[in-house]
Image (cartoon, rainbow, N blue to C red; front, side, top):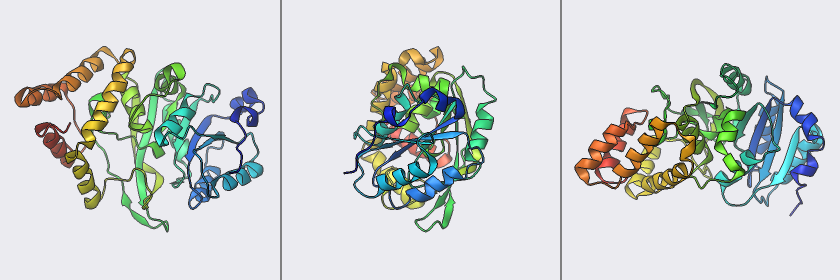
Length: 325
């Protein structure tokens, strides 16, 4: 397999580079040769050009590395930096990049290898993030336009209208990773002690922690990403009836409960990051899951948890009744 030069070597004059870059794009790749070139082109087409691309490849054996190294030659090593990933799954790969202390920027944007960014994605996100004081953790996310393998529009991801909150984050991730942009304060919060938390996904963890500490979160109703749907999606949209049925099937098999168990353990290990109010919500939620039927319903209602849509809340009620939460 082609060798990847360590990021510390490839970066060269690191401090000089960070002064030039307002946004660090964090891209994780694995066997991404088919759609990766279009995504890279969409980075280059951004109206906000003060960005640096950091790529962590998790052991690709196709032409992914060739494509990345070709663009590195075109753009320069100061614009595209490449390293090997931990090979522990997509969430660990993204969090390993997030945790790196020497990747410093005012803002950070997660990117998937098979999407296409709208040209004003970074500009819109940064415009909102700059309205938040730099010491307050802040996270931007948005709706997406769904496309197929041939770039044909399939529709849109759900339009979430209820406010983002920790009570919502406990039972739903509305911050799709391919749309997420966050500030340096959020990065420090998410990766305290530079240790990789054991979580379900990096985007859900971002939503949980930033909302849990009382930070600012904005869901943009205008799509910022063309979200590609194909058979190899690790996590797809839940907009179609088939997707909703699959999600409900996963709930009935206990997958949702397993995810909540993992997230609760990670949050308890980082409870010092949460506000007093959200610590109470977490403990009420965690304890209620193990209670008898009537007490479970009462305490979960008192915790204030909710999902964004009517159908989502119907599923949440079913999960509570059947002890699948």
